[in-house]
Length: 409
Image: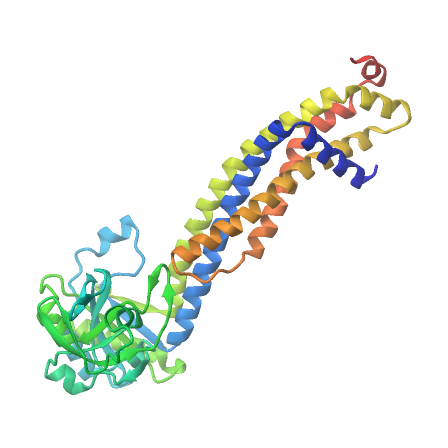
């Protein structure tokens, strides 16, 4: 039996029954579209997060009140934890001996930054931090200078701004030394951050940094205050020892009993990757189920089309059998036709899925990474779909009695 001939017959069937075939191919395309779109987003997410963690380095870790990624169940567990405050941070900074790189930061979002008659959209991140933040989080000041210890100690009204803020309120003007206003407070711009681009739907350049002491005084509610403490070990080999020292000191500072679990979270590149991996797993399952339901419906459609094709071509089958065609050849022919229909729908879905992923990635500011593994998976699924749902019609065709088939009108 000629495979190419079976493929051509399948294509002729598509041309002969356009509407019927279109509806079936649409179901396949929708299923594959869901798979490829989700796969594109997952690959883009993973690549962006991996790059971000690589830029920060493997020797940095963070201390937070709660984990970065939570579920409803874990949220109930962590909600009564006491915040990490600035007093505790100062005590920790004085007691840790293994590294000098300890930084505290807090942020608030949806801020509007003004200068003269110009202002930003109300979506700027305002971050309060200190002089070590730039080392622990691998943030570079391209123009001007970072904070100094005096800026923190004397609670100075100075600011370092991102490129998005520069573009909106200082177009074609050197922003260094200029004055900006945040709510009722005025700040002098002492630095401009190096452009970092977008990550997970948020621009990393749409932010303003001010001294942590200033932030806590003017922008933080005391009952909501909880800092993120970032610490950079001297090298990767000393990371575990530094973490152990920090945990011990912070437990003492927070008056925790030996039998109590930590009332804070330690996050490293590895733990963040694991948390993100769990999130990606849920996203993968969602995409697979969304596409799977459409593909199962498409498989039923493929079976119906092939059963109709068997009935319409009963006489043709009788002629083939009368001239010596074997049952397995007839089965093979119809299965190849079913697989061909599925693969055509799959190719359409892959193309639209790639375009859909590209638009979504652009909307949430992610670099596009084409999911080759998901494309291969889609091709395999379409192959299995064609064989599975084409098997019964093919069996029906192979079992037709040649005499009865020749009489069929």
